[in-house]
Amino acid sequence: MYALIDCNNFYCSCERVFNPQLRGRPIVVLSNNDGCVIARSEEAKQIGIVMGTPEYMVRDLIKKNNVAVFSSNYTLYGDMSDRVMKLMAPFVPKMELYSIDEAFLDMSELAYTDLLALGVTIRKHITQCTGIPVTIGIAPTKTLAKMANRYAKKMRAALGVHWLANKNLTRQALEFTEVNDIWGVGKQYAGLLNRNGFRTAADLASAPEDWVRTKMSVVGLRLLKELNGIPCVEWDYEPQRKKNICTSRSFGTKSQDKSLLAEAISNHASACAIKLRKDKSSAKKLNVFIHTNPFRIQDEQHEQSIDIDMNVPTSDTSEIIKYALKGLDIIFRKNHNYIKCGVIVSDLVPEEIVQKSLFDTLNRQRSKKVMETLDFVNRSLGTEIVRFAVQGFEKRYRLKREYLSQRYTTNIDEVLHINI
DNA sequence: TCTGGGGTCCTAGGACCC
DNA sequence: TCTGGGGTCCTAGGACCC
Image 1 (cartoon, helix red, strand yellow):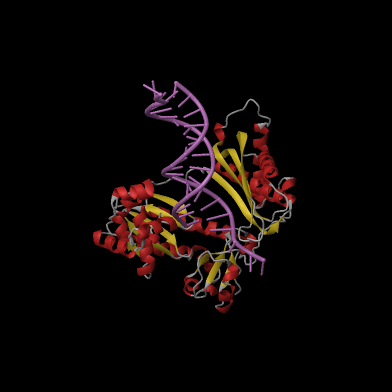
Image 2: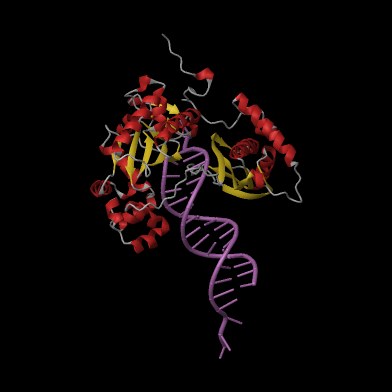
């Protein structure tokens, strides 16, 4: 048996922990640039704020209902996530961190016979220690555990735990779940399934295998088996080394200025290099992309990306910036209103096995020392103070973050003050 | 006026090799 | 007249996830 634990409305719950006055009040958290709604409290869901909606489209709704609005504060959410994950770890021999607010727990080797009771205990422990409410679904496969979790939210909200302990309970959950709510079924597959008369997960679970194989490839086949209680989704007990690393942002406002794009690209390249070094990886390939705002149909559109081979795998900031700017030079076009750009590094290899190239122009030993020093200084200052000239200092393309909360748990200047 | 960011996996088709 | 077949590797694009 496997459990899926996820934090309810995680980002909103994080905000609420440090601001108890928000209890009972609708809360939304916005994406970067304060663009879209990416998290909603129960109250916000109830008044009809839809996930992913642009903020300006729900502005009236927000005003009318006195909704508390926050810019996303990933420093805070990341730290709260660490705390929650560390609290559940001792209950099981093995677990997998699936996302910032979710984890799979392997309960197959536990001596407990009453997993429901165990779930209740874990849930209470986490809520008590962090103030973050969680929901737990327990079932024979990951897909069914996801489904059990969703069932718990909808039908067992007070208990917050649901265990598909037998065939009847599993049947009931399968019939309760519509195909578009199955983990692994997106818009396209949901459309396909509906057109062919499959309405619930129970319908899909009894679909003919070869039909599923033909229409939904091995992905669908795995899904079918998972719904029937046969585990097919791999487990990652150890976090895997990343295969791609991407840093990208929209600008606060559109721009035709190449120097501004160059500054942004330099910063994204630098961010990629920092992430690479943190992962102890080096990248061989780099991709730079820029595009105009597709929602502005009155503007002439330009969207382009370019792959660059970096000769010797690297995580050196200045080298990656250099290649990225070369890419920008090639794809940039004058007189276009650019809104977003980014850098992706791929073909990652562990840093210790970087091959020496005959034509290498960089002193790798020296570079490594420089980067270590740079990381050390920036880490101890808690922000990227030491940087390259092209990165600029005042980030001119900076995002909008009007409703940012404090970094309550990670910055001493921003801890919660209590007046007694 | 204002529409996020960061990932993974799979497949089909082309290039290339013997 | 009749012009192979099988394998691997790579990439672009699609689908999905949070």
